Image (cartoon, rainbow, N blue to C red):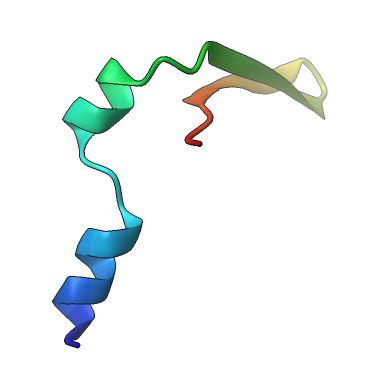
Length: 45
């Protein structure tokens, strides 16, 4: 098995991510001093 094959097995395509039935979740990260960011992700089952 090549490195490329391993990558194909573990990384879902963007189409799979967008068509997933899992709900979109967001995570707010506060870095202090008024800085922060929000991560939105979809859990893959």
